[in-house]
Length: 202
View 1 (tube, helix red, strand yellow):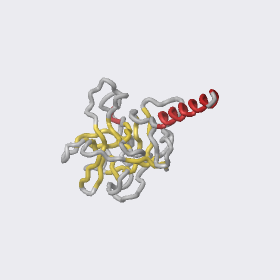
View 2 (cartoon, one colour):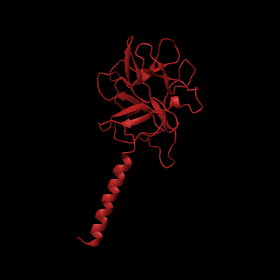
View 3 (cartoon, rainbow, N blue to C red):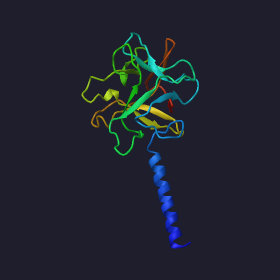
View 4 (cartoon, rainbow, N blue to C red):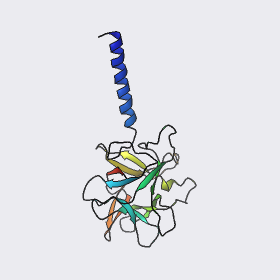
């Protein structure tokens, strides 16, 4: 093999390695494309039997609205957008393990933000529910920031609440989003078994 051929061979492998490393940092949608922070997506269970896409669900009172799943399998739910805490200026791709806001793209009768937020503990299960609205308990609004992490299955992800970029010195009790089924509703809450999800572009 000539020196020139060897150089081209090495450069091609280096480029391929860099491309693989780069794409592994991104969240990938169901079409195999990186999820972008200026696009709309549906969050759906990766495994059947868990309900439809993510949606707004009423709790014990009319407000705040909880984050849950549609009871009908196969429904898309309500579209969301992602807003990174520390966006990258060179692209719009949503990265793994980075703090971000998740916002439903719909209006509600509550007249409040549709940002996902860590709520109070559920009285029955003791698990922390995911609700909507702005976190006004701290200046950092850390309750509104979640992160997307890779599961062992390519293209399947977990959503966690662990806002370490928003508040690096906070000692939060981090958790992974799972399900609670009560009163005919499917609610999202931390812990109790992680819910693998996929992201489908509208």
